[in-house]
Length: 135
Image (cartoon, rainbow, N blue to C red; front, side):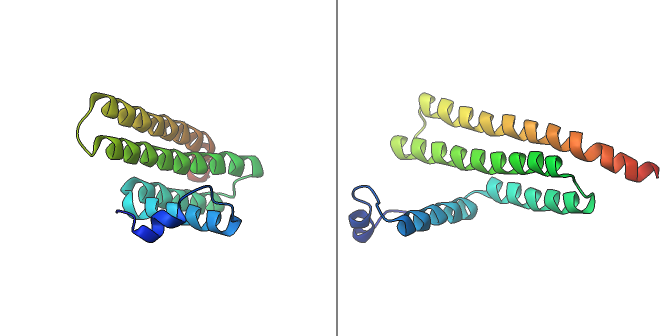
């Protein structure tokens, strides 16, 4: 979406107002949720995992690992979106081999984070689920 002239005037120079900085950050988060299907999928998974953690009564350090994984996934998805948008802006959405390399690498970072998250989740949840099934 193109900026109107008011956006251009407001965005010139460094933002020195904390409230405006927070508002811009919240707008960025809303934009990622609105525009990126995978961010919505990750968020739904995070809510489901949180509910499962409450049901299984995770311990403090288990919650720390789960929280780390959830936030890593969300941050990586935001970074991936940033790289995709910058490449699209620079290439005017035309194919460029370097642009493809950048997008693929950013997507790879998300995949590695997802694998890490699944491994951590399995280490935490599978023993608890197993205990429920055998008793």
